[in-house]
Length: 196
Image (cartoon, rainbow, N blue to C red; front, side, top):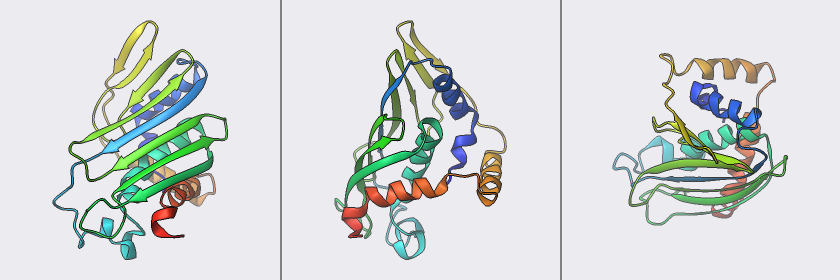
C-alpha cells in the first residue's frame, strides 16, 4: 500500500523538519489510532471482508500511517505485532498493536483500535531536542515542540488531494516506490491473528 498522504504538504513539512534536524537525532515514534465502532462497518462492508480487501481496517486505515513512517523515517527492518477482535461484527481483527525497528535504529510502537470509546489519531516522532506530532487523517496542525516551545502549523490540503497518489502510482510502475515494504509490515503485525 502506497499512501497518497506522503505527498501532502503537511507531511512534506514534517519531512523537512526531520531532514533539517529540527528535533535532533530521532529516538522513537509512537502511534495511537482509535475510533468508535462505526455503524457502517459491518459484515457486508468490503473493508472488513477479507475475500475482497485482504484483511481488516488496519490494512485500510493503518497502512497510511505505516507508509508515512516509511517515507519520514525510512524502511522498517524488524516488526512484530498482535491482533485481536474484541467483539466487532466481522471476522478480521479490530485491534492491532505492534513494535518495529527502522533500519536507522529508530524504535517504533503503534496501536490501532477500531472498537474504542472515542476517536483519536496521533503520531509523535521524538528526537534528542524535541518532537513532532501529527494526525494522519484529521485536519489538525502539525506541531513542532522544542525547548523554545510549541510551534503548530496549519497546512491545508491541496484542492486535488489525490494528485500525489497519481504521481506515486507512476513512481511505483517505474520501480521507484516502497509499497511492498508497508505491505510486509502490516502482514507481520497481524500474523498471530491470521495464523500465517
